[in-house]
Length: 107
Image: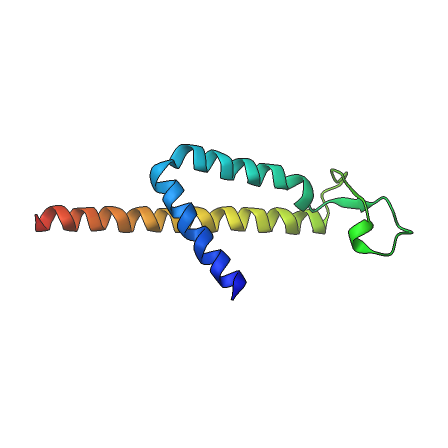
């Protein structure tokens, strides 16, 4: 119940922020995403192999030296997600322009 309440409240606050302060809100959201890349980077090496608790481990990001199957899979997922977002955005814009045309025709 707490998670659902938090999600609903956050979505309403985010909707209000986007309606009233679109550019600063998008800038903050983009900053959060860019800032999180360090933690979600797929290529990381465990610098503390003797530590057993995962929360206490330290991982160091690195760039792969060779383009192997793992790198290809990550690149494929990234490209697929990019294409998915692009298609959803295009469909949304197409639907919005169709609704605008219908509203103008009805007026």
